[in-house]
Image (tube, rainbow, N blue to C red; front, side, top):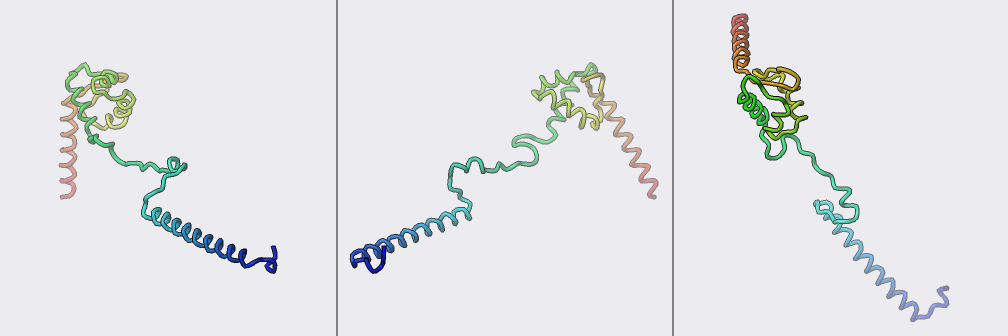
Length: 151
């Protein structure tokens, strides 16, 4: 197509098409601006990849509804009620509704440090009040000695 061969009707048609193209480009750029503002605000436009790209926020601390220290108190209460014969971890698991592995882990970590809990055998534990009193008396005597040393 040569410019010298164009008729006035064709030039008018070209001008009309160019104007229409510019109007459509303006609409597209306006839509893109709206999309960008929505992204900045935090409203995400759903798409095919939206489900894959969503990040699940990890929560720290105890799960919703759980109370710290509840497991410890329930284990001690169950061992107290069992008496001198004690309870196995499996029996405790059934009684408290806690997974066996969670109880084994608890006894391995926290149970060691808890005064009054005595291991009788493999997976068998009991609670003894006299052990608890001994630990308290040892702590008191150590505190008294530290006070005397500082005087």
